[in-house]
Length: 148
Image 1 (cartoon, one colour):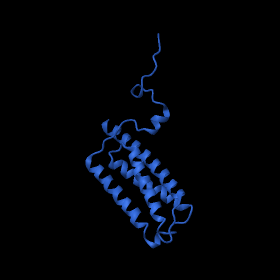
Image 2: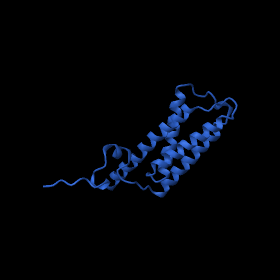
Image 3: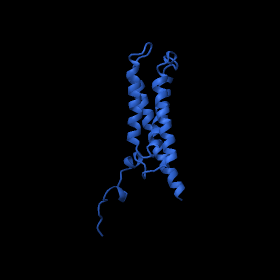
Image 4: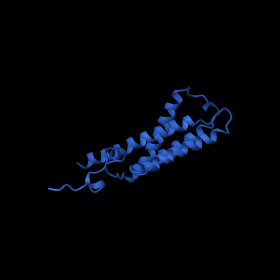
């Protein structure tokens, strides 16, 4: 009896790390849910970019809790993008959330009382990545449960 090597992704040869990063199956969400996700992502992006311009925004949350708020906020943004993009474009969702964070940090350089902080952007990226990963896996899990 000869043993043939695994032939790729569909044959179960995906390394454990890749299967943990990528959802088991691409998900497609209903249009109404996708539109809700897109609307939430756009509204949250506007709130981040416009709300940060308010004079009271500086020093609203003290360190180190500001990093937690950054991670949670950009996690919510990435999760909204994930849902809006159909529950399967994790890279695009993370990129959109982190780009919003980068734009916000860049704009803060020119606002009185505000400063641009790389640690804030790092917290944004960590929160966005974790939330996007959780979201695509939850969507895939929900779809498997619904199909049963």
